[in-house]
Length: 115
Image 1 (tube, rainbow, N blue to C red):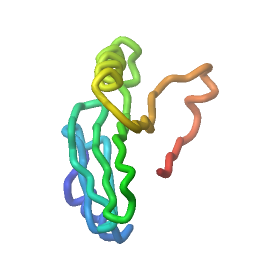
Image 2: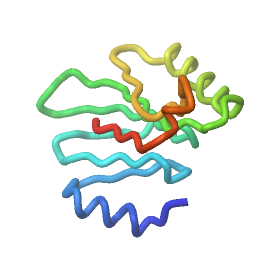
Image 3: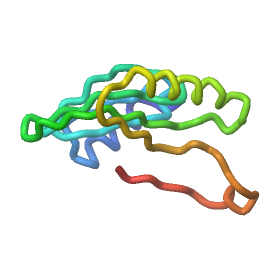
């Protein structure tokens, strides 16, 4: 599990005003004062947030994913995402690391996602 001091270190370095990490400390979300993030669901493999900006009337939901490596352990994630899809009215996006690979060569190296 990631130490909260480590998260705070990145938070300060990146210069964001707000920070959130999920229950497993595997998903970190940083944002500026121009946005309001409301945490709707905090699960081990994903976080669902509602994002609003006072400058833009178009609010939306976003699921941020860090999936388990084991295919069987991801079943719960897929069930949760299907449930969210049935409940959400309006724009909704899903981003993150799904830990799904096509072949062994994809396991080599590091994958970074900037949102």
